[in-house]
Image (cartoon, rainbow, N blue to C red; front, side, top):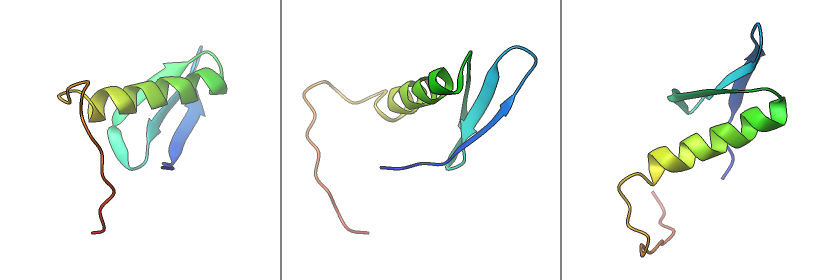
Length: 61
């Protein structure tokens, strides 16, 4: 899956959020760290209530 990252340089850190999920926002010392932190935040949000023994299936909408 690919999502779009919106990012900018703050006073000390790179800041960013996901265009498709603007409620997910984080920071990083480098752009690479920012990307990793956004991935982690996305997975934590999406998988918050999902048990470890879950199953997945691709569906068409």
